[in-house]
Image 1 (cartoon, rainbow, N blue to C red):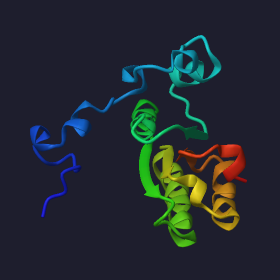
Image 2: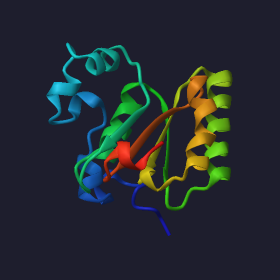
Image 3: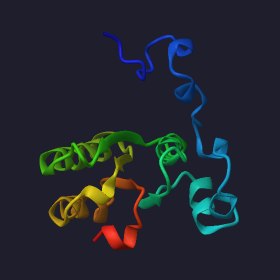
Image 4: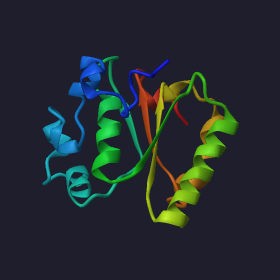
Length: 151
């Protein structure tokens, strides 16, 4: 069975939400106070840089879309996982993949973790060395207040 979200299928058969998703950060609507090229994050994005981010907001507000657009704009590899399903082994594998991709191809890797507030301290700590060395960039999405739910 074909996955509707794969890019190899006819684009017109993909769900409308997938077809309308912004491809690059410049196509993201809203958040001008953050994405404006005169603001710190906007300046970084303008030069193809990415950073580690935690995005918070209600379901359906574009957190995943923004992360995908950020990866595309920065020409970074995109890995997505949900914190409900991901374990320490998955996180280490993503970190090692980011490390390998950077060393072999000089490409950045952006790890998008949905529901990141569900990670325990141990899971969060697994990512830290990869983030500190710049081998992996993290964009975490949460519907919760990050300062209450994340270490």
